Image 1 (cartoon, rainbow, N blue to C red):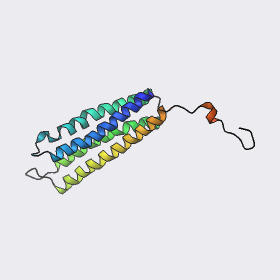
Image 2 (spheres, helix red, strand yellow; image 1 turned 120 degrees about the horizontal axis):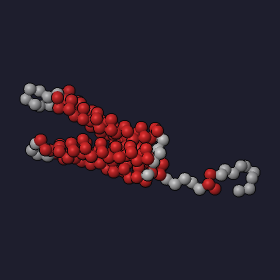
Image 3 (cartoon, rainbow, N blue to C red; image 1 turned 60 degrees about the vertical axis):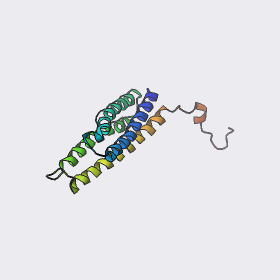
Image 4 (cartoon, one colour; image 1 turned 135 degrees about the vertical axis):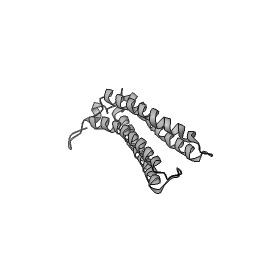
Length: 150
């Protein structure tokens, strides 16, 4: 299960990386229609939450320490915050639907939250790799005292 935890964490990190690509696709699509952010929305609202749940499941099944399981849960909360920030940013438009400084500031927080989420997933992946790495041989764990032959 520890290898599965590493694989799930890796796939989750790849999904987060792709999320940035899909955001750029939406930002640079001309003309920007309602579907410009479709890949970004589907990945953020469906793919990443499912992968996060799988990562949590494998962390529990791998008997990861509670702190690591908690860290694996954190991206789910950050995804919920992402959705709230996106909705709030869209809510702050003027009478003709144009962006306002407040809406753009909130959109900036959406981007920062995404960066934080990536860093959390990197931490989960590093910890999962450490957990899955084979333990050193018993002989290597024996310390030699000064003055004793090795």
